Image (cartoon, rainbow, N blue to C red; front, side, top):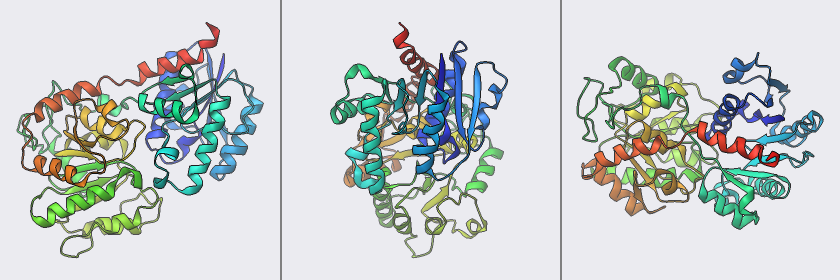
Length: 430
C-alpha cells in the first residue's frame, strides 16, 4: 500500500501541531516497513527524515514553496492528485478542498474556530470551518488528539463516533533522552550539587549542571529562579490574565520570583506584551520583544541592556535541545490557556519534575489528570491564589504532585499512538 503523508507544514514555524506531525510520521516509518511511504515536503526534506533517504519503502517529494493559501489549496492537491496513492494522510492541517482522493485520513487538533473564534483572525475562522466541514464529508477517518476534541467534533460536525480516531500527542525525543528527572525526584534548579533542595522543596539527584545552567542563563537572559510560561504567544494562551495577576502581586510585594514568557510570537500580541512593564516604568525585554518583526527569532545586543530586576522576561523562541533544562530550572510552570486540543507544554514540564499550575479548561484536565494544580478557567482570583500559595510554599502535597506528574508524562507515547493511526489506515483491509 502506498501512503502519501503531507509534511509540508514542517517548512513553517514548528508549533505543537507541526511537532505532532513530525513525531507521528517518524514513528509510522519505524513501525511499518511493509507499506511504501510517499513523504511530501515543501522547499527541502526536513532534516529528521534524511536518515530514511536510502530506505526502499520511503520516497521523498519536494514541492516548490509559494504563499500558504495557493500552496495548500492548489499546488499541493494538484501534486497529490497526480500521485495516485492508496491513502492520503494529513497530520498537521486539514486536507485541501480540491483533493480528489477517496481514502483520506485527516487530523483535526481542536475545534477552536467554533469554540473560541475571538482568539483567531476572522479569515482563519472561516477557512478552518470550511476545511473541517469538507473533511467531515470526504475523509475516511478523522484523527484527533483528545477525547475532548473528539466530543466537539461529533457535536459540531455531526461525525459518527466510529469515524474518529483519538491518537494522543507524546513527548518528543529530547524529553526522553536529555536528563529527564529520575525516581520521582525534582532536578536541582540551582546546579550547585548532586543532591540539594530545590525551590519546590524537593530533593534532587539529577541536577542541571552548573556550566549548562550558566550557558542557558546567558543565552536567554534568565534569572536565578523563575515561573515559566511557554507556548506560542497568542490570545487563546491567555497571557493577558497571567501578566495582570502576576504584575499585581509583584506591585503589592507579594511575589518576588520573576516571570519568564517563552515561545514564538503569534498574532495580536504586541499590545499585550507592551503592558509587561517594570513597575518603575522602565522598558523591559517584553517591550522590546513586542517591537520585533513577527518572524525575528535572533537574540540581539539589546538583551544585554535589560535590567537585572525586571519582573517579566520574554525570551522568544527556545531551541528544542534547550527545552528540558529550561523547564528543570523553573520554580513552577504556569499554563493559563483558555482552550487546548491537548496542551503539550505542561506535560513536558511534568516530565522534567516541575510543578504545574494550569487552568481547568477544555482538554487540560484530561491530559494532566490529578498531577497539576488547577485554577478555574479565566478566573484571576483563583490564579492569584495558586501563584501566591506556590510563592509562599503553601502546597503541602507538592512532592506527591510532582511524582504523579512524572508518572503521568510517561503514559503518553508517540510509538503507541502511531500504532492507532496505522491500524486506522489498514482498517479497510481487515
